[in-house]
Picture 1 (tube, rainbow, N blue to C red):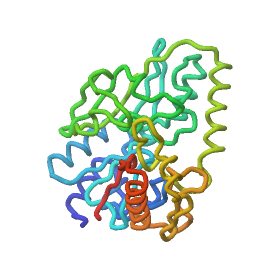
Picture 2: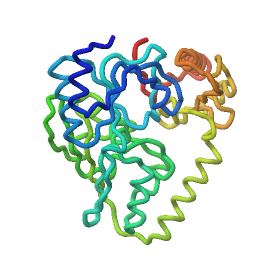
Picture 3: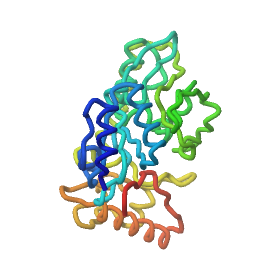
Picture 4: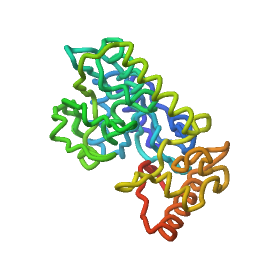
Length: 303
């Protein structure tokens, strides 16, 4: 429900760049999602602070997203304000042996900046879709490494619009999680601790990781990466495949025949299709393998 007064006030805060009823399928890697009441991409920290404090003061629901590569948004969309942290907050710089990146910077840009400066540690992130902010909140990882292990410090924004810092240690990073998933704060900037390494070695390792992703993951179809977390000592993909679910389809949502922990959009999949497939997968794996799969993707919006 759009409030004309709220719309006008938001327009003033971001120089008229508020989109009403913006389809969220344009902003998720699954290409799924209904309309957002108000959609804003802040161009800088001041706009971000202004919109966040306004939403808090006016009690307007606020949803913050990055590249949308780990999200399932319902067809009914998202009420209130959707803030997309993207190109307006995407600066990357080098300070001594550290890489400093704003939350909207893509992981690919982060890895490239480190490589170009002869700094190692971020090679594993090559090819991972998504932005720095989302990667930190979810402690994204691949190839045996994760983002949280390199986080030295994070600049955060609370819902009143005030900036503050937290060390990486204070965020208690763990498998695909950290304390930011429970704390009402927004990632603004992250400082990653890296180390000197030969550029050619970095490049070669990044190329190997990208080639592996291309050969083992269904990247040519819209997807949201791994749907389920890996259970301790096992692989969600292995369990799903062993349960005979590869290729299972609901509407245009299908469990990938290439990687069973990926659900792909064959063209016109809806959030309801994906949710039905998720439920079927969890029920079948529990019944046949005795393991309860936990979601890695986030489900947001009206259901």
